[in-house]
Structure formats: C-alpha cells, structure tokens
Image (tube, rainbow, N blue to C red; front, side):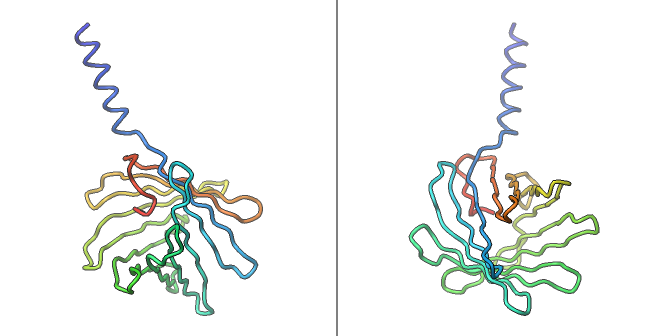
Length: 177
C-alpha cells in the first residue's frame, strides 16, 4: 500500500510538471492593405493589449504594442534578408532596445528562433512547425533549454488568425513570448 501511494504521488508530480496552463489568446485581423491588428487577452478573456503591424515598401514590418488603456509600451521592427531569415529588434516605449530575436527557416518550412536581451545575452529559443492543415505550433524554451510553454496558431477562411498560448506556470503572461 505504501509503495502504491508513493507511486501515485510520483505520477501526480510528473503530471503537474508537464501540465500546460491556458495563459491567453491573441486574435489577428488583417485589413485590405495588409496591416494587421492583434488583440491580446489573458486566461480570463480580459483584453490586455493590442499590437498593430504595418509593412513598408522595403518589406520592413513595424509593430506598435499598446496596453489595455492604449498607452504605447513598445515597438518591434522586423526585417527579412534575401534568404528569408528575419531579425526583430524590440524597443521599450522610450525607444531603448530591450531585446532581439533572429529566426531561421529551414527547407521544410520549420523555423528556429533565438532570443537575446539588450546586452546580446541569449535568453531563450523557440521552434515552430506547421502541419498539413496550416496550423503552426511553437515551443518556447529558456536559456537552459527548459520548456516554458507553447502557442498554437490557426487561420480561418477569412484570413484571420487565432493563437492560443499555454505556459508551464498559470501566472505567466502572453507578453512573456
């Protein structure tokens, strides 16, 4: 009996360690000019902010992030090289650089992303794959390789995208990504 109870406790800890909590959703709408507006919500469905993206004629995408009150909390600028790899620079509301991400897409369409802070130190990675239905799944890891969470994106027939984020910690924010 004692061995059985120890086994059950071990199984429950293992299950809890692999549990994924709903930490929010993001819904992206694209207008007829190709500009995108993403509305972010927490795990309770409450709106926490928006991100608005526009692309210039050189292919550079600028995204403005706002909190729920409409205050600008940051900007991201994404550029693509001739191989299709992207570099995104993140800045705070004052224009100070707070991070960078570099994404490389392989010949199968899978993407590997490396994140770094304002000093260039690696803070984490993510890997994205797309299934045959067009649904993308991204797995996020910290600098030690430990899994932090996942996000799954699907696009409806109107071109609108919905992303569901899940994290190892129920207190995690979608802004963590």
